Amino acid sequence: MRIIAGEAKGKRLECRKGTDTRPTQDSIKESLFSIIAPYIPDARFLDLFSGTGNIALEALSRGAKRAVMIEKDQEALKYIIKNINNLGYDNKSRAYKNEVLRAVEILGRKGEKFDIIFMDPPYKDEVCERVMRAISKANLLAENGLIICEHHMYEDMKEEVGEFRKTDERKYGKKVVTFYTR
Image (cartoon, rainbow, N blue to C red; front, side, top):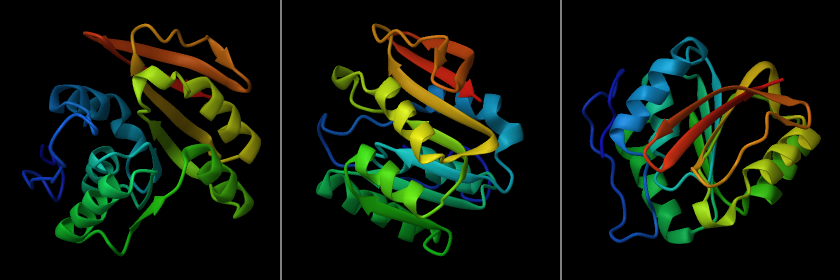
């Protein structure tokens, strides 16, 4: 796993062995970032269910201003922090150990706003819709922001979830990436 483009292009990211963490594949990541390229410069990026930090770190490499990564697994969090430090992004990113719904609530109370919110939860949980409702309640998405949900093809994402409207959906084998805006 590596950073595909930007100032950290080609740098390797570390990930624990086994199947507990399943990073977004490079081919999907490349496609995703070609779609969201106009949103990236100076973006405030929130990566929920962060895993390795792969997506948020790619965003920083491509010009995002700031990234927050949320991961509840302590072992995975160690790799995120290691990757942040290895890339020298400790001055513009933070990684927190917390359950995602709780973290969304806390970020909302702090008045945080994000231009891009990415989530890649464990597929068996089918929580994208629940997390999006929490994002809405916490008012985390900036005015012209974008929510991106990576999910299994069997998790059917609605056309509208609260105030958010589906704008695009791309299928990559058994994985689907769905995009929402206000």
